[in-house]
Image 1 (cartoon, rainbow, N blue to C red):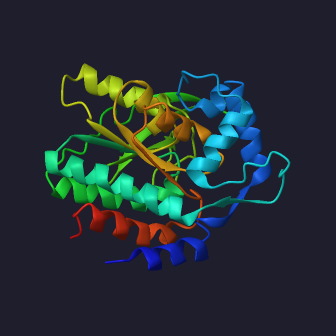
Image 2 (image 1 turned 90 degrees about the vertical axis):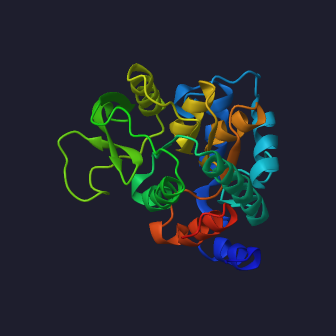
Length: 271
């Protein structure tokens, strides 16, 4: 089993925590947009509080370990690796509880090129433990606003993990998968599950809009988040997201494998 010391060293070496690639300028910009309730950074969350920029910064310092000095405006952002490990512990505990109860789960990602393998391993383990891994709305078309305008994407599943593809693209799992923050995919999936009168997820696992969109609808949600994604941490602070792991969500896919082993071991799901 990977111990916390070895995991901590890996987080820093892989730049999953410690000094990460996300820039302070980008994070501060996102905090300002969140405070202004810009839907691009709300990720489907409708905050109950006002959340001025100073409060968002204070929360991100508490949850991630970023500098709370507003005069610190440039350079690489920082995540406290001990906070990442604490987040992984809470994340793994919720997965373990879901496995014990054989809870239906829905798993989705807006980072298919980076995080698909991480989530797929969780899907495999939960399925082996008897949890229904749901795949509602397969193939449904979803219109999502992008920086290039509104584009139509298709909801697809790879090894039980939902992702959005560019329409008409086929091939290997990573091909055609798009990076998205939108909550529309999870809303589409949940609506299809309800219409089918089949099981509804008791737990949603993912990132970006998958977590905030589900949590806003009252479904338990857990996920991963970078320092420029304050919505998940606000959702956790307001009680609509159960667990958030602070880390860089855009490093090479292979670098998340030790985290997978750590989570599955703690959840007693190692195979």
